[in-house]
Length: 164
Image 1 (tube, rainbow, N blue to C red):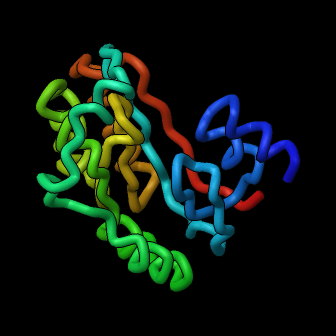
Image 2 (image 1 turned 120 degrees about the vertical axis):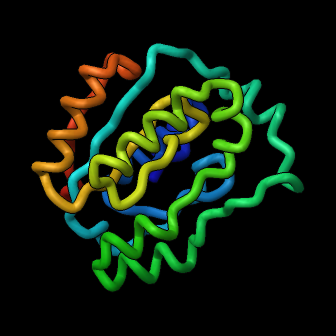
């Protein structure tokens, strides 16, 4: 607990990394509520070769103009049901409304992931990294190879959920 309090002074994501597992993060990431473990799934992570200023994204964010909001209660319920497709269908990132118009490659990568079998794809944080949730390892690997060949993302990694 004490480390988590110190961690928030270093960065908003530090307390979450120290906590491990699945959690709901609120505020700037300092208020954490432990959740049941995320159901098993395959995740592809792709980072295009652009740099995004988190400060700029938050400065440009106009919450009154955001159309897509994540369904937090629905995501929590889907996690409890161990339903990956339902979790993915309720995801959303309000920061995409700012970052995607500035860096269209993000939307291109999201579309490529969906076209190659991702249940859903979304920008992580303020960007530019995109992640896709895949139903199986084969489609995830095929998408990884496609993205590497296309060249819009130099860093493309596979991973999966785990239980700490």
